[in-house]
Image 1 (tube, one colour):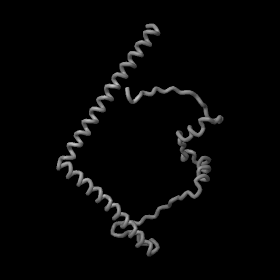
Image 2 (tube, helix red, strand yellow; image 1 turned 60 degrees about the vertical axis):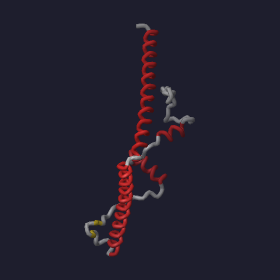
Image 3 (tube, rainbow, N blue to C red; image 1 turned 90 degrees about the horizontal axis):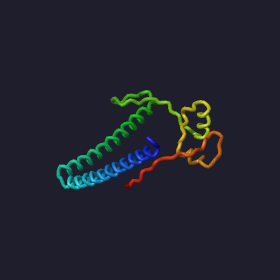
Image 4 (cartoon, rainbow, N blue to C red; image 1 turned 90 degrees about the vertical axis):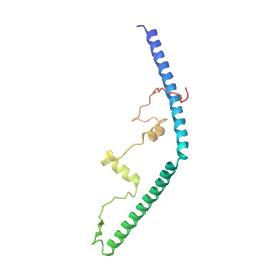
Amino acid sequence: MNIIAKMLINQQTLDSSLDSLKTLRELEQIINLDIIDKQEELKQNEVYQSMLRDQERLSDIKKQIAETEDAIRETALHLSSKDDYETRDFSGVKVKKFNIVEVLDESEAKKWAIQFVPEAVSLSKTKFHSSVRNLNLPFIEKKTEYRAQIPSKL
């Protein structure tokens, strides 16, 4: 098969794929509109309205649970602090000791981490690439890359 025939087949394949993509996107729009119509119908349904009220009540209850848990933890910590944390169990609520680290100088912490635990330091590639795009640095290589972009409207 000669080069022109291969190019023709590839162009035909591309055109066919683009036609398929256009059809799929049109189908997606039709189904999305159908879903919206059905959601509007549901909003008129009493069972649906009842479910929405239940979801709202459930959300309120979850908020109350979180607030109550916070109050219980705070109370247990307060009670335990009264005897210098000797008592650590209050009706099943346990006060536990944790050793934590607070970073006071992030810049110094990063310098130290780069030297001693480099796996703890991550690089935001997007931010880094945009920062060095116009610089000539010995540890980067600039090259051209081509990407195919499909228009959202075919």
